[in-house]
Picture 1 (cartoon, rainbow, N blue to C red):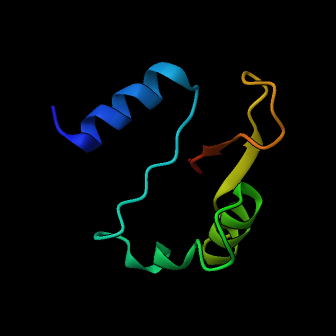
Picture 2: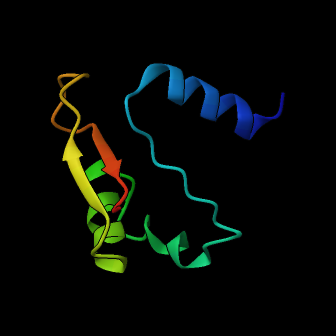
Length: 73
C-alpha cells in the first residue's frame, strides 16, 4: 500500500470527514499554507479560494481546532 492510500485509510478509519487535496491536480491550493500551518489559517485560505467549501467543527473529536469539510451537493 502506498503513502497516500495509507494516509487516506487511516483518516477514513479515524475521522468522520476528511480533507484531501491533490496539489498536482489542484495547484491553486499550494498557497494555503502561505500564512503558516495553523489550522485556522489553512481553513481561512481554502475558504477564500473557494467560498463554496464549508468547514464545520468536528465535535466527534471534541476539539475546536479540528474541522471537517462538507462537500456541497
